[in-house]
Image (cartoon, rainbow, N blue to C red; front, side):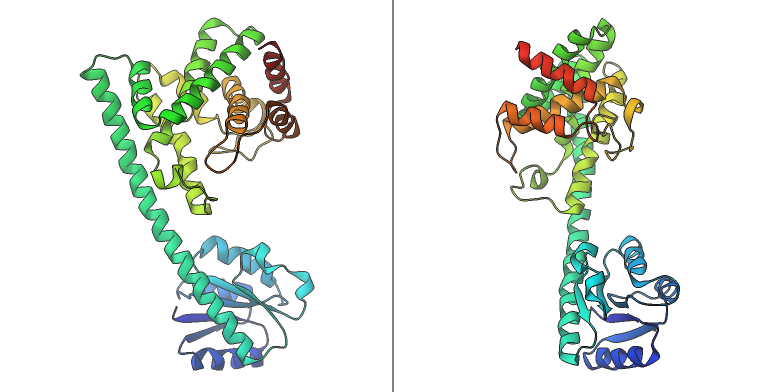
Length: 335
């Protein structure tokens, strides 16, 4: 870390902080308002910002949000006389300084900012390496599937299934259970046969994009970082792109692409909601969640069916279509 941006509307405060920053061997930059700070950052890179909350015009919290969005690797320290108005953790800040404070406390905040910045840079580098692995992984599964089609003479569905069995056997087993649930639900709904077959294919391959994901993410026992979550969420689009490239599975691609959307909005990758989400995708979402809860994952233990059903109901209509959850419960009661 080499530079610190001081944002405060009081010239005397900016002057004192600048002298302290210089004494730490760092380069100070100053701005008297949130707008001036953002303007400066368009031409001057800073590793840490010390932001006062109470300023004319846009306040410090608005500025902090803009900094996190536009300069995610820059650490932020909030300085305020009203600590009760802010929770630094909620704004992902390195530290919170309550005015008045001494130089020694300011130095602690700068040191915390230094560590925050180092972690942010390391996280970005790690995420970048993962992104390269994902790109290589997609190329690899495409070659794998095409090789099985050309050399082994498999049809498109069989080729993708065989690739999944070799690369992500546990995910395929999960997806085949989801497929069985979805088939039972389409029968209960009286879904036309051709549509039901298409939905079944989409259910089997709704997580096929995980075959391109780095093992470091798929097998991580602890909580994923924000960057890792963003990488993992790319499996939906990758799976849909794979299916779209094959004539025998292309029609299932839109269903897979929307299979992680939320009925009330807030899902990914397109942010669809309600009836914008295809029927097949809404069916898969219910069955996928139930199987994940009852079978368990690397990061959580399995729970009983009753608790899983309660969780599905709790998440209606925010995440799941309530009508389809009712259908699913009926299917479970018969099997």
